[in-house]
Amino acid sequence: MSIWWSLHLRREAASVPLARRLLLGAMEAAGVDPDTSYDLSLALGEACANAVEHGGEDSAEFRVTAYLDGEKCRIEVADSGPGFPPGPVRVVPRGSAPTDAEGGRGLRLIEELADHVHFGNRAGRGGAVVSFDKIVKWRADAPLALTT
Image (cartoon, rainbow, N blue to C red; front, top):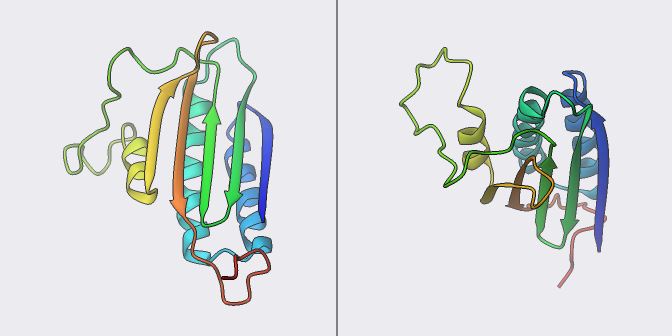
């Protein structure tokens, strides 16, 4: 069984915890292990915070889409800002930024929490897209877990 949802959220700070709470609620209802849900919600929070901060002056919203299918969860956050600069996205290497630095840690954190990450730009429309996957661990009483 699979579920998916998509949200269009205002580009404001209050949208970040809202997106995290919606994801955590969906994961709990589906029976996803709390540690997996927490990792996904932290990564989602970082991606949403980036969309709020860099999503473009003329854009009032950004989009979050989540898919839970079988043993994998994929989350995508897309905004309408300037996008990533041309070329490979450079993530701050671990240990190279001071621990009190405010910028540059979010993409690194997403990479560490997810199993597969893609940073790119929306084709033809402008804006950044951050997508990440994680293999799902299920609770023993999970209603949506696959039985083999």
